[in-house]
Length: 326
Ligand code: PMV
Image (cartoon, rainbow, N blue to C red; front, side):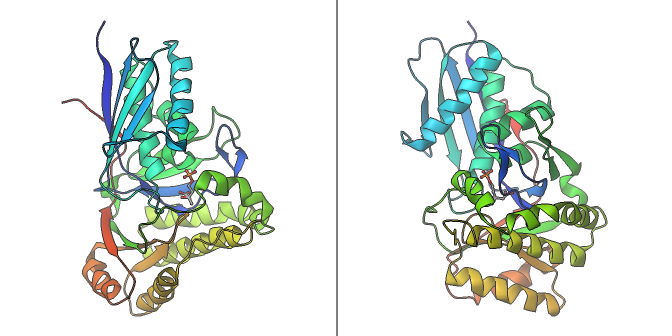
């Protein structure tokens, strides 16, 4: 029998219009559409090997054997692959990240995008990009956006069939840079899966959802027309709306640290100084400071002056998930 093994590499992505809350938790069908771009330079590389001789699924991340909820999540995902392929084999999964996990840099997005591409290829399934996006969504909603390349929109749909992401502009369409200001490297207390389940407890979620089409349309057009001013205003509003929902959930989720607030108060001031820059945050305290290439050095110098920033990771607009064949 041929070796049932494959390796894939994926980037995380940063959402400019956020996904927060599900219509269906099991299938991760989101309440609203979202828009993101992939983050080049940050990478997760995953190898999956299926073997009829294996007696259980195994997972290691960055050379550490994982046995907690991380393994449970991967097992549930591999179960879907086994059902799709009709092959009942267990798998060994090894994954390497070159950036810190669980600090709001969407490591689960890159993880499940890479796992989808590697596991499906390893077991002999030939899937289209759309099918891979749908599959990745089952592991982590935002992972569906790391499958296609560049600037990506996730159409929320209302079923497993019609909830997937697609690219609407290539990575070289617009030279945006994401300076990720790392405020803490500690693991976050409430992960996004638990957070999505709380979204409906906020009285603000209904208003956030009702206004989503408008924000999606402004951001999609701002990207296509390379209109940074329009992008900046809507991206900050959208992030603030999601965090308002988080903070008003029951129980409340407050991801911000004092340094987070220093950054988000500074960025609009810099924009008034004609620097093309805006901020957005995921389910964590780190701030993604997005700017045009021409402003990277200025923004980097300004971030250095803010006390409490531990590190700044730099990413540009990246490719989608790919198989590594060598
Ligand atoms: O894919 P999940 O379940 O990790 O959720 C991601 C949620 C946010 O990062 C906060 C927003 C987004 O759209 O990426």
